[in-house]
Image (cartoon, rainbow, N blue to C red; front, side, top):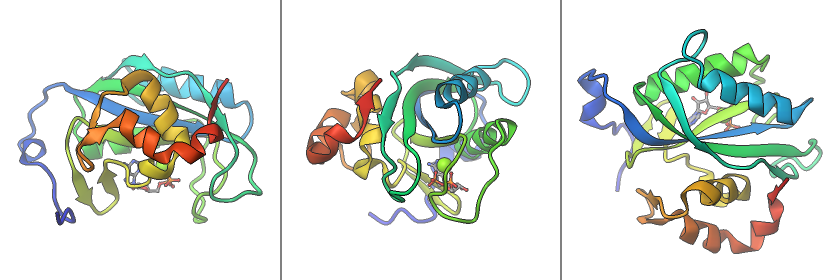
Amino acid sequence: MKEEGRIDSAFLEGSASWHAPVFISLGSNIGDRVKNLNQACALLAKGDGVSGDIVIKSSSSMYRSSAMYDKNQPYFLNMVCCCATILEPLSLLSTLQDIERALGRNHSPERFAARIIDLDIIYYEAHIIAQRGLCIPHPRLYERAFVLNPLAEIADSFCDPRRDCSVKVLQQELGIQMHAAVKI
Ligand code: ADP
Ligand code: MG
């Protein structure tokens, strides 16, 4: 299916209804990673300030993994939150980027650079979105144990709208990499 340029019409009408489940992955590989992840969760759920309009319904444990793309980088801690939000996908992305900046992330031009905090939208209900600057489901989730392991902990039966199979099946398919993200 051609996805480029596609966005569901529901988001073009500006209705302010709640959307759930929306899965957000969080990662950190600089400084006090536990503190960084906890601060990001607090900002996500904040009723005022840089965020708002997001409710965290459940959170996974934190998982430790070695850096996947640049082996010279320090280790990561990652987790996934299941949220409800009234923000449409692009506004949600911009709120996540506000939170990243509030926690001190400087966006390096280098791809996969070390980061104090990284917030990605993994799923937004069952929507498939592909437009400039935003791709949902997150295109690299299928190769990432550090996403699939925490996601499976809180939502193993959620159906991936692109692959039309459960998160548990995606995790099993990745199999060989399962050891690479360990619950702390
Ligand atoms: P990465 O998360 O891939 O390591 P960045 O955090 O620097 O890299 O994000 C790079 C760009 O990815 C962002 O500017 C954003 O526009 C884009 N992006 C596309 N889809 C998503 C998504 N589902 N969640 C978060 N960012 C996304
Ligand atoms: Mg990111």
